[in-house]
Length: 312
Image (cartoon, rainbow, N blue to C red):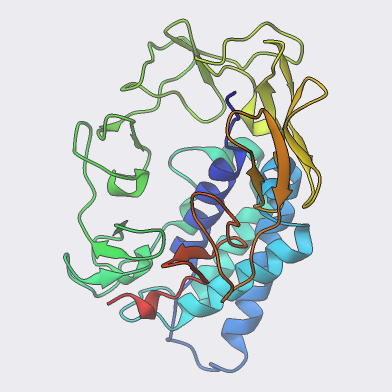
């Protein structure tokens, strides 16, 4: 049984926009301006995600309000990040651009110009948790929360995440920076398609429609709409269950867990029960669950909310 990980798509986009837009200690009113800027940004980002990718938001958060509250908390933590080059003004510009962006622009590999990370002051090799801390605008993560400042690379450069590549490039499954393919371009594990396209029979093409025959080994349903290749090998809308509800294959339909929950399956079973995400500071298990409320990570069995200044 193979489930599409829409939560990964959402978290990669949302955190990418967040980490390049936030992070400042340079303001005239540190008690008010950062809070207001982060509040406006988090509201704009989560509203845009609800518009463009509602299934992704629901896979990560209980609702738009939780998304905004958790995103604001991330933003506020990043405001005090050591060496950051961002300011409330750059964050406000990103907020405006996010509100005005089309969904295609939001998912474009190059991202929104107004949301690109400004250069920070931390040299390559320095511990970081946020792109805007680094002189090369890339915090290459070695864990879910922390990494080291590193240069970005061009086509065919080695990468572990898309942020390791120059803007507009993607990091392939083979660990190389590649240009995303346009419709009709050849594609493979080393040649990725743009986010609004899928790789079908070796070519970048529009996603399959609901009801179309699909192959789980070659996901071609519209993941941005929350579609997946179902148990009956046709594209169907992904169903999300709440904590305590059935998940896995339920009445012939693949069902995942919402709000960053984890589907607990007995050995050999195709269906199980959703386990709700643990709150910050609570016990977690990255493999067996519970997972942590986004965007916290399970660190040594405890949910830890990301804070760039905790990266040493």
